[in-house]
Length: 136
View (cartoon, one colour):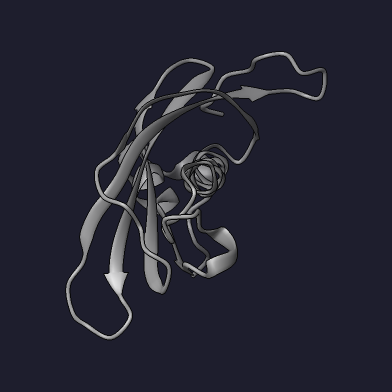
């Protein structure tokens, strides 16, 4: 049986279906002089996950227009695993907001803790770079 198209899905189904999870290892080439993940590198990874989430939700050309309220709660040490989770939390006419969280996991121990969270706003655009409706 063929799957539902984006057009046939409810908003809740689209939000759930677009949630994005990516795991990465934190290697020394991404860390600062404190041997923790560079803040700018973390923001880059968060924007990428947010972009993927927004695109999976809308299936349109999406561009980042803002980031806000990025809270660095814990340093992320080299030699850990991070999980980035992106989820659509608000839908406007031409824009949507994606919340991204980064969790830290030790490589050789159980458990995880929230390290960073933030929000990214995207706008759907057409081939002329003009805003269009996020919902087709």
